[in-house]
Image (cartoon, rainbow, N blue to C red):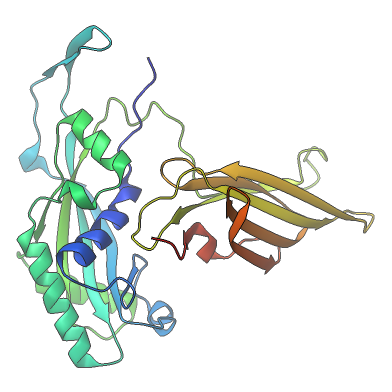
Length: 302
């Protein structure tokens, strides 16, 4: 029997952004979402009103810890048994809004506050399919709340640490299940994976590949796009200064993800996204390291 895919904390950004846009009547075309630390550099790079969810703390919710094993039955596989229930982890977000007009900031933050308070349980409608499947497997929900205890002081300290003038913000806590019995059974694939070592000690045949990178592709509704053809053309220069072109193709899975390997002697990268032979988007980049925007691509389709 194949192991079920694990609960992915990376599915939360999609769920949170969909929660605000779908239940808060917020125009997803006019508003952007960011999950990076709201530093001065990050704020200065924004080009439109942005809602920021910054994850700054993860810890177990010991009040919700269950110690009695659960009985489970899988009818299709004709098996059953007992297992420990999942732990509950509190994910603390610093939620803030950035806009050129202070009135827009306040209006948008007020709307976000209402949406978050109205949904103490994240609706399934806003979750990626994999996230819903894993929650059903664990018979669990994702709950959320606005944190109150000493929240003002905690947030002020965070703004100070980020080097940004304090602003109105929320301390939002999302409680997610963590299945300790299955979380470590599957291989972890990172978006960026760098191998570092002594150049002289490398095998010349293996020294070309130094990184692995990946990303996800969505439509304008933040839905993962499956069965897309993603190709990466690498223009590289050999040690003898001869030019070499490598083209690799991948198919996106149901989570919209693609993964490629990189070469240390790459001079130019071209990423092409197509469906049934029709090119949907193409990117070109000079250098061996892809830009961050390749990690998350939004197509102009519904």
